Image 1 (cartoon, helix red, strand yellow):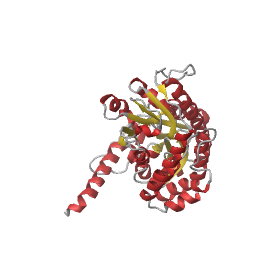
Image 2 (cartoon, one colour):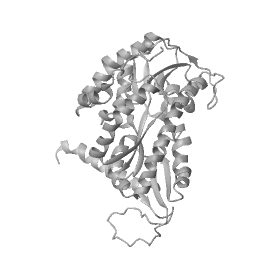
Image 3 (cartoon, one colour):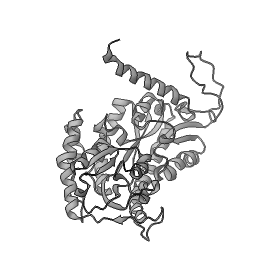
Image 4 (spheres, one colour):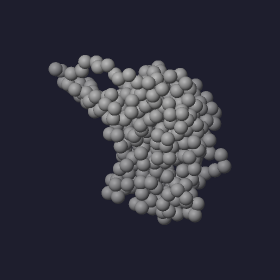
Length: 388
């Protein structure tokens, strides 16, 4: 076999093995099922396809069970919104017609970078995918959350509204995934062990990032970006592998970054967004009234998550710095670094001269056209935040 074929063969074997393992998990057994947990309706895959067996007759009034993969398991979006919605609210709202099992992807052994592919294959019928996880392979889908683009939630809302029609069509046509919601995490801010007074003080430091675009932003400041998993940030700061970390304001508090870092720089570099989608076959297999209910209620869930992300940003800043306004986290003792008008202008400069041009070069799928007819059509894009 030619050596040039080895990488593709390895990728194929890895995906097949991943799909087989995930298919054995209870939440990935099917898109929806009228049975109850443990009814034996899903059997473990064997070395050869088993002959089809008749399924037991089930009442048309039996509940439809959905299998869902949620977002990061440690943060508010999952614990206070996704998990309660699927396990408690949806059965109530549907009068018991729809029930669901949900597990966060980082506790289910699901690689974040594979989520879009697994949704496309139907291995994950309903799932949350972080935009940062597919921004390397599909940078065009992550344009809405480029670092430096939106320094406040109002700007992010405008960008998201302009971008969503394109994203919906692209995911449907190119991946067979039905986009049902766009979620947002709290503002991605900077936690540092050593003093800093402005953005450019990151020069020469090793900084944790979560995506290629975040790496572009910090590299433009003269820092060395280090891609680190979400739950490894505290260990990386403690070990000295990184000196600073870019992460959610409240997420950092949840991870205990305030215990190992001393300085909080609160200018939002970006926000950390996620899409919730469904495999189209699994989606279309649902009764029409179930799809209507889910679209309506997921829209409400999305609105609640956005509102909470704004609150969590403020709470994250208050808690990490030990302010009296802290209600939802642990009071830390970090020094809050004030953001100057000059630094906001620097944010805009880095976005325009580095982040956006590098995104355009990485993104080869009609990206100039996509940008110009969506987010770029708003002349307020990439401008200083009002009132700063």
